[in-house]
Length: 353
Ligand code: SAM
Ligand code: SF4
Image (cartoon, rainbow, N blue to C red):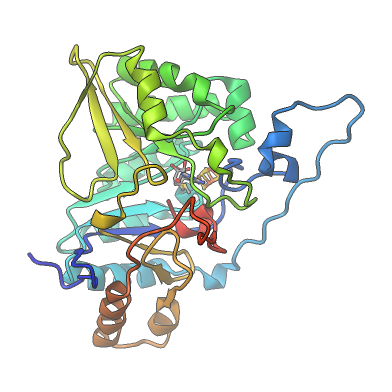
């Protein structure tokens, strides 16, 4: 089916990411840093000085619950988007597993005509409690985030002691056949770049696809620096000196990850390089924030207010019209690293990665 959602550059929108909450139980320093010090991890990496007081915690102001879209409102939005050609859904956040009765949302969404793929991105910490219900509700895929295999570094990067729980969740997802299991790691210079090879070995031994993501300027601390980005080429050079990797063809033009397989047939890796090798030209994604605002780019400075329309009981036609209009204005691309780049006010935890 040709998409009714085509932007002014000819890109057809097929992929919708929905943030169901802005809250999170982790404090990843590249997303929602726990303290000013963690946010500014240049200082954080020098280690604590003797007699230094504990750094003050940052208090985030979460959106009041009444401003967050209900499951019924999300369902209605997705039905309209699917009727216009959206086929792929990814539920994200914040940490989506913190949202009450999430399987109820998943079950409803999995039954919408036209939806072919339904995934949920999670830090995995509380997956065990919800795993069976999510599977029964019709969830197809479960990508996890895992930046480090070292408990001390894991804590440094996520602000929490949760490595064991996340590793157990990955095993559980395997047992429940949420295949293929993809695990995303944001790679940051001097934080976890020394763990690249170990993460690849982990993926190989577990039959998991590891995907390495370049650090993007979407952190709440606005501490992003180009120098902290480990580029695709740098990651690849490092990995190729250790592993025999063979490039794989793209599955489709809008794929975010470039993929390689191990020459011995045991395993695959991906690199997502929005900073050093932007893929905006084929981007087929739009994002709905937890408070019902549509963003046509991760780096948008403008949002389209669907919450108000949904709450005014607007007609399907009115919702369709706004969606078509919003998509038509989708940005050509981002300008990370250029002098003209301005970091959006909303952070990754709100937009939904
Ligand atoms: N809490 C869930 C999780 O961590 O998987 C879902 C939401 S999180 C915002 C979605 C993805 O965005 C995660 O894979 C996370 O690593 C990634 N992410 C967050 N901040 C990022 C940043 N500044 N640069 C690149 N990726 C980022
Ligand atoms: Fe939470 Fe995910 Fe952001 Fe980490 S990346 S703070 S787990 S939303």
